[in-house]
Amino acid sequence: GDHVGVGCMVDACLECGPCKRGDEQFCTKGMTGTYSSEPKHGRAGTESTKGGYCSKMVVHEHFVISVPKSVPLEVAGPILCAGVTMFAPLKKYKVGPHSRVGINGLGGLGTMGVKLAKAMGAHVTVITRSARKEAQARAAGADEVIISSDAASVKAAALSLDLVVDTVSVRHDIQVNALAPGGLVDVLDVDGVWCYTGLILDMQDVQVARLLMKQNSLTGTMIGGIALTQECVDFCALHKIYPECELVDASPAELSRVYEMLDAGNDSGLRYVLDIGKTLNEASFQLPRPRAPKLLGRSRLVAQIALLLNRMALSKIESVVLERSSLIAGFLGATLVAGVGLVALPLLRRMH
Image 1 (cartoon, rainbow, N blue to C red):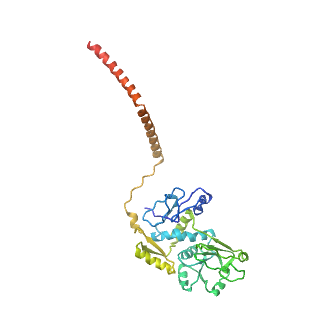
Image 2 (cartoon, helix red, strand yellow):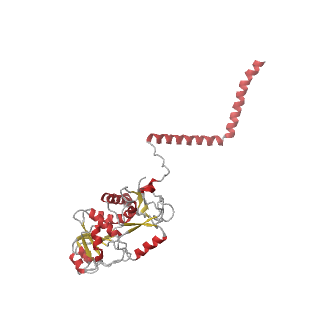
Image 3 (cartoon, helix red, strand yellow):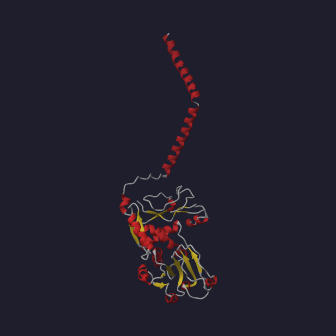
């Protein structure tokens, strides 16, 4: 069977402006997320969504992503989440050859961002607090590395980037709160954009005049719409861009081990993929399945509709007959007696 996946959304109104232009994640009536989200539009059940912690899922066809069979099943899920999260800003700001892109943070998002930007032809710089991650950054495809905890490293990279995609999900100071030069924001060139994808819950202190000096922008992106998610999956398949993953058995012992490793810091940039029903293998697609009904051809469809209408007409006639059964029975009885009399009278005459 076909390989398909479900990303970050399972429903949206599909009628508002954002939905119609392919940005279902910005649905003005509220999209229904795959996890911890209330259904609103009638295509995602009636209860709060529970995510992919299951062996089967029923989803409206609009929100299903086709996964090329060349993509290993265990990496498809992270591409539908981390992949499109990083793909969205790179596409929005038209990254390509000659673009100078920085990726702040080298966890699961950052590693994927480096690979995507590099495949688009950009000159890619990783920004990280730890010099220990330089080898990891280079292995992912980075051309340059800035150590954000080293003032000299930051100063040497001034005006070197057109776009920084910031994946760090905790508050961190890029020093846009002071007029004087100095700080991580200085790596942006004129018209440079600092784009957040990491979910930071508290406000950053911003000195607007600092942004005006180089016409810099602070912005953010979320995920992508369904069309962009499909484009991301196809792009990854074409360029063989896969996140670093570890397949994990969904047992209490394994889950405890993974949580402990994450609590200690995800320095490896791994994505831990839970195989809930041990189905992340090609063999699971070879199991016997109920056959779907064949789609009707045009002529057959017309015939089926005609048959249905005929049955409806017969049903109506039947109901009328039942309603007037006594009247009809009396009429038929009288007719039958009359008929029998007409037949019997000549017979009697002959006998006499």
